[in-house]
Image (cartoon, rainbow, N blue to C red; front, side):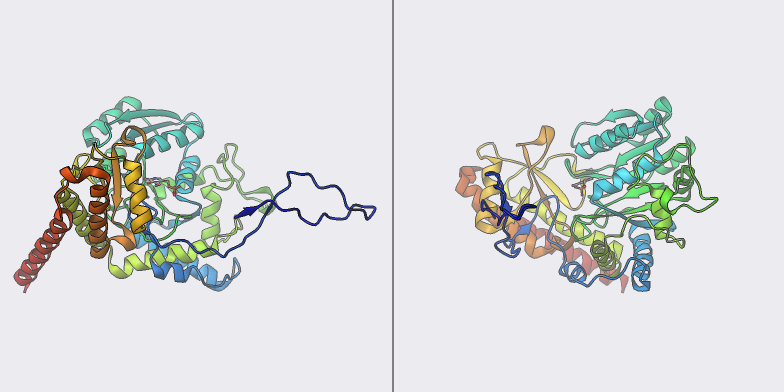
Length: 447
Ligand SMILES: Cc1ncc(COP(=O)(O)O)c(C=O)c1O
């Protein structure tokens, strides 16, 4: 809360009190942080897993404390499992997911490089914009929102534009679509293209395999299926990407030793210079930024959660609860946006009924039930809501509660005619029952 108060004026040099400018304001922290209870069922962020919050309340240690460097090494190992990779350079970039994207792109792009960006939603536009700011000659192909590209379309564009880098979003949260990537690695190798993807929205909730799919650079975030807060961007880089990045290595003047590299074309950002960040996370422990210790504790716990559960089991959990949400929304009588064959498991876009205001319904859900669902961007703004079932919130109770609350709010908003009473919760229950019958059958066959 801000209060306009007058601070006691600091004495002037001669000891007299100076006149205070009348506009001067001081921030008074009147209350400790005590956020309202919310169930975050939007496209992220979602409620953090309590294990992650506990890890983040641990005391700090020094930057080079053996405990800290051990945590850094463990974090690298854990994320190799999460990303399904053997890449040595698997680490955290400090900052939100977009910091990971910027670090990858600014470290791989030299001004004038050609970059191909297939855009099928808002975050493809973000890749394009960041690549342009890095000085790339960016070529874009666009797919209608709610659809994805075929591998043939992307290969044709690669042949036409001959890029150095293909930069594509895996799951674009704005449309809920996941671009199939499994065939693109081989295409990129055949045309000698570096293959980068942003898995912020998809990692942990959808099948993703860095090495098997031939990816060179991958960046993520914690605030979706990984069950953490935003603020750390796990990332991984293949030997090919590392070679490219290290070819521009320029060690900072203040810590440079005789014989250290000084590139004629250094990476255009110091903070996001991956060649220096690799040396900070590697055996040299060359000083760069001060690692965000509390975020590292959180990111490490997010990976531990996934590895403990098993990556495949986590993906299956997202498939199951995402499926129940989808069927529940259909059961309510609502229509789903986009080509659902390519929908991410963890988020569903649903058309807003014509008779209601999307923002008013979202507002009432938040005020009366403490449940947040998402709005949307660009061509979808005002047309669809986005409802997530991810990370800590990919659970049966959250799905059923959200469907029940949405039905009540829609009826109060005047959409009763188009809503099937009880249909959402019933359809979700049916979906769960079918899933457990299938699981029982599979278990009996396996015996
Ligand atoms: C696919 C995707 N990429 C990038 C971002 C940007 O993430 P951040 O806000 O953590 O920087 C988001 C955020 O929702 C996202 O969904």
